[in-house]
Length: 311
Image (cartoon, rainbow, N blue to C red; front, side):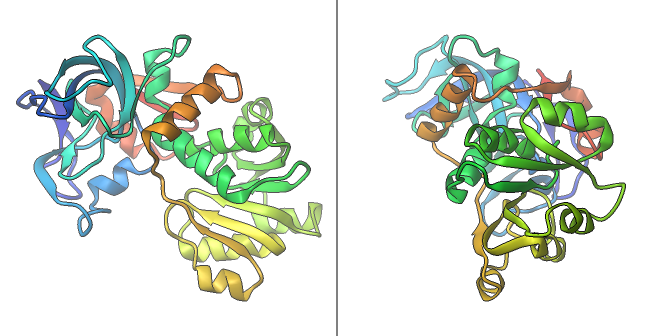
């Protein structure tokens, strides 16, 4: 099968032929049609989980993907050959991901059937970012009328978080580039801050001197997150999805929140898919490129929205 692989942590993905895996007991073999690029793909290639999960090399990266079940192993009853499915494909041993023609997944893993009305390419863009966004909004317990600041709002996690926060009745302040303003407003933002115009903290203090109620930050390092959290009112909440929140420091400053893992199970994935079917969320695929363009896509500093590799 065709696949993109890296031969060591930090390596550049290369296009090569790899053996097609077999569906063992409890597993299914999935013929992938599309793989979604996530905020975490580059981090994983660089060794983010090197000390937490065993990895196989050559490593096939890729967390999110969608396609069709082509074979099932023994004891699999929840899925059948021909089912359109979407899921996340990061599990021990890591290195058998979605940037390939085929992958395997445990039938009890984070995999779900794709509902009618959602295209396969759209579905591939959803799992990690959609699950993370839902977890953020659930953790924040948003109330109507609250002011929510979303850093990197035009990115994959931010795009979905903004929609869910708006559905919950929050007033969203989106931090984005000026050319993303119209898209941010269409997806639910009340205000859009151009981070190139002036420091975000200064803009918030000028426009919202009382502070914001919640900060969602899916990208910042600890120092930047600490700086941005200065605009969160006492009793407010700060959330990071890259492990940047110092919980003890937040509590000492009268803030709540913490770190939210970019993970989820099959039930949560089905819930996110149903939110798309219900119209609570749209999945804007902004860039679709062939699988072989993975290296260029990983190095693209500002993809904006969701990017998908077509296999």
